[in-house]
Image 1 (cartoon, rainbow, N blue to C red):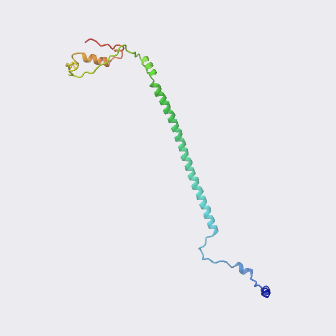
Image 2: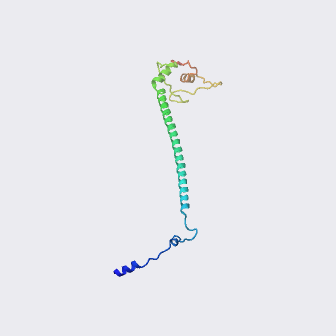
Image 3: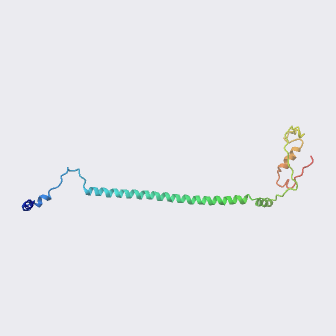
Length: 168
């Protein structure tokens, strides 16, 4: 075995010129390969487009948030205004304020309360008859006029404190 080794060691190695090695390379069909420079430019362009899209979406998000904040402020202001109105209504509906306002307007508590009962024309149970209508459109007996006058006085001073029935 040592002789075989010696044979291999003594065999001259074939010198290959360096120039030939440099020119050896894998041959591909022209136009099918992607150049690294083109791929790099495409990647940079894609990155810039992605950054632009993300910045645009972020701007839309910020704009939407500003609108939401403004709507929240308006909603809060409306809630505060509604609360003020509720307090005002509660004050205006208070019985003490109503009594004070009525007294300031000159209204007094009557000494006697008279309730009027409705009378239907021709009702046999009350014994009332249908009032006769004169040519001028006024009732002939005057009873209806007194009852209507007591229920709804036409003059502001008439009927204040005077709720007694008159003999007819």
